Length: 257
Image (cartoon, rainbow, N blue to C red; front, side, top):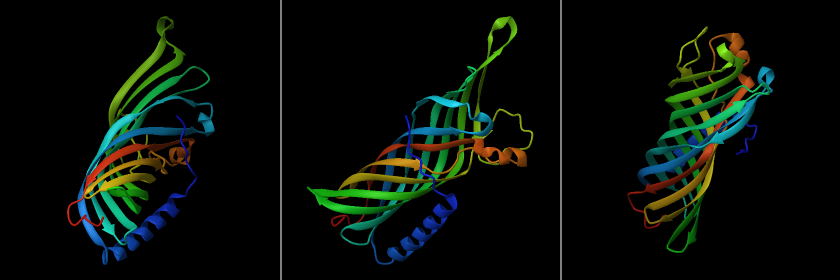
């Protein structure tokens, strides 16, 4: 399964997100505010791009990682047709990916990333039947909290008695830089993750159903304490992407939402 990944600069994304947060603060002074819990089901994947010394490595298959998100949403209605809806979510993403090279070496890597995600939704609303259609787009900042992984490596190198060499590993995913000369079983990933969500929803009174696509912009690969390893970090670029169906219930005065 392929995904669309535009080349956006992360520094520009930070500036846009900061500017939109300032807009949110100004809009909140005059907005009609409702708040409520949100839960969602995630179907996520990881994209991989290899270059440099790994340019002969290719993705062979992907399998979805099913996770969930849960938290709170705040709807700031600024007019009959527009609102700003920030959310604070515990969010599980990741993916199962098999990749290999021309020599027959293969690896299956299953990652689960736990994030604190803060999407900032900009929502247009349109009357439709008993409720309203929502169309929204959101820059999203996520802070990595931890995670888990398993990996299965099948090497073309022939060991004793002509048997192919296989190695299975599992452990936790941590968010700090990879220590110099690290050889442990735990792995690391990039703690700061930027992305964009866009989707549609339908709201009847306080109940909102949504479906959205998430497009990751940040490389999940970790940073390294070793300068030489850090210089080659871009040889592997992995990004999150996937779909979420969500349910939110807003308390408060929702008759005009």
